[in-house]
Length: 307
Ligand SMILES: [Zn+2]
Image (cartoon, rainbow, N blue to C red):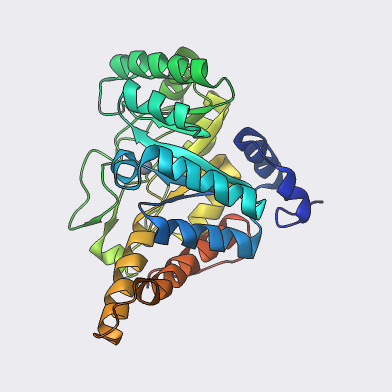
C-alpha cells in the first residue's frame, strides 16, 4: 500500500483527489491557519519535512491582513517551487462577495459559513454562495457549516455558545442535499479556541465519535472538523476513522507563535534583525504542525503540542 509520504503523493494536484486518496488511506488532511509569512513558512516547512499534503487556511480577518490575492500568489509560488500538494482554503467566509473574491484569487476551496443563521436561512445563503463560486471555478471545493461551535481561535476563560448541541444526521442530510456542498462542517463536540486549562495541557476536548459516524453515513460527503486545537490525540485518530477528512488547527499555532516570539524578543533585547528574531518562531510553529500532521497520518500517538 502506498503511504502518503511517498513520492507518489507529489502527483496529487487537486484538493478533491487529495481528500479521496487520504480517505482511502485512513488519514486526515491537516488544515492550518496562517495570518502572515512566518506562519505560512512554518506550515510549508512541516509539509516539506513530512511529505504530507496540507491545507493552508485563512479566515476573513487573516485574509485581510495578508491580502487575499497576495496569499493566493505566495501559496501558488510555494506549491510550484516545492512540488508539494499544498492547498488553500478561504476559511469562515460570511458573505457572497468575499467568497467570490477568494474563488477569483485562485483558492482551492471556500468555507462558506452562515452557521449563525437559523437553519433555513443558512441553507438559502449557502446554496447561493456555492452556486456563485462554482460559476467562477467548477472544480472549487465548497464547504458548508451547521451548528454552533463558538467563534474565534483564541484562549478563553469559559466555553461559549451552545456547543453541546450537536448536529443531527437528519440535519446534515437535508443541508447537503439542499446546498450542493462538497464538504460539511458539523458540530460534534468540537469548539473554536482553547480554554486556559487546555493551553496548560490539563484538559482536552472530546468528540462524539458515534455522532461523527452517523453524520458521515447520512451526509455521504467529506467532513471537516473545526476547532481541533486541544483535542485529545486518540479522539483525532478515532474521528478520522469515523469519517472526518479535514482537521482544523489554529489556536495551537497561535499559542506557539506568541510564546516563541516573546521568548525570542527577551533572549536578546538588542537584536533588531527581523529574520533573526522570527526564525525561532517559524521553527516553533513548524514543530506543532509537524506533530499534528504525523498524528493525523497515524505516525505518532500522544504529542502535547502546546504543553
Ligand atoms: Zn473554524
